[in-house]
Length: 110
Length: 113
View: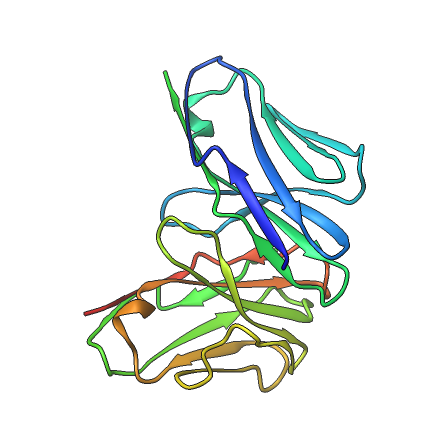
């Protein structure tokens, strides 16, 4: 069965303290791996799409990487405004079905 | 470019009542999705449309949920009758085509009492 697992469930960082969020996936053929940011009371906001192992994408303090089994979202020198829930989702090649993980809730303290 | 629009933003109903949600996708997007997001969980796909045809509705509780996209543009999701466990955020998303990046609306927050 297709599955996406994110860890940790919650992460508390001090401002400037770099860290990584993990997304492990098991799908019947990966077509794409997506990262979204979700603020309280809002819909998910698109961040990155990764298509093949070894691919990396960056945006400001965020960098997403992909291997054959997992993806990482690296946050460098985070700021309080980076506090949000980060969701990853895997799209399989079979039915074009997107499976979301439960998310990692990130709290960055000034 | 206008984003995905949803209404209402909030709805409170009593169990066994009915409720409907509306979604207008980004112009030109052929694929439309409805997700259910329970507090503390990731979005769960309920139904996916390609133009006005259903691509996947395997996780839609068809005894109480229905959805339509008659003209291949906007869509409605209906719950009848509602149960307490339907309390959740209902998210609509759209993409240029199946398999492309999905863009989400703000969601409708439903509370069933």
